[in-house]
Length: 305
Image 1: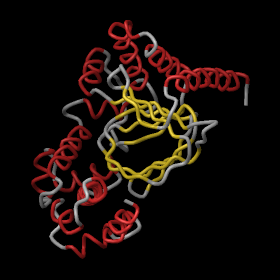
Image 2: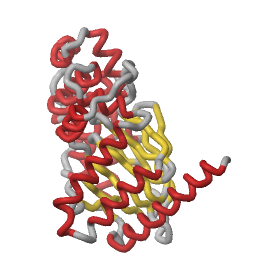
Image 3: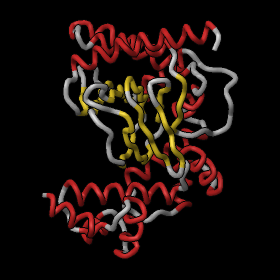
């Protein structure tokens, strides 16, 4: 390691230590917290978590302390305070916190993206010389001092509510700018530009999220995206690591599990509510996805409840 790299590691450690101090003071118990800065959320855990499945909206996720694994399709992303995670399109993912304790809690700062702000910034400062290939809708990148500094200023604003209205928009704009100018900035650029291939895929993604209980016709979905059937399949898988059918299945299974666990719906009702026509197929796919059949999970919940 040369002196330059050592200096960067030292500086990022100083910023992270200050972020940990501020977050520990303000968020003193496990939970997911909204803040006075609308797109900014803070997650604290005091121990490793079980594997959870969620539909992740576009966001920047910055781990300040701890370590986490996130799954997308068959891919796994392991990240810690040396990296940040960007989810650029809506994706069904799995995740679990690997390192956390009461003495050293897991802290993650999540910034939900505002597509309108991204589009405006791109219009004012267009990027040139970008790769044309469609990339993953989720990626890791190395954290740097400039990004940490901007995030630290945002978190500090939580202690100065009167300043949030004036200063938070400028800090958020700077964060977007840093991300757009980063190594993977072209992926964010692609989702915001209306005539790009990736933006067309996001139309198909949005349609699936609104209509996942309906039967899937690839030709109709291709029309929504304004792509040929083959181009849709290729581009969709490049962005999401799944085919449209696999993506729809993930949405259906996650919603069925939510209905069973959170709303107490019986297995049969949940199965048909999310669009399955075969209860046996639903049970097989649920078991494959979550590690146990839905009937067994429902029985376990009744016993513990």
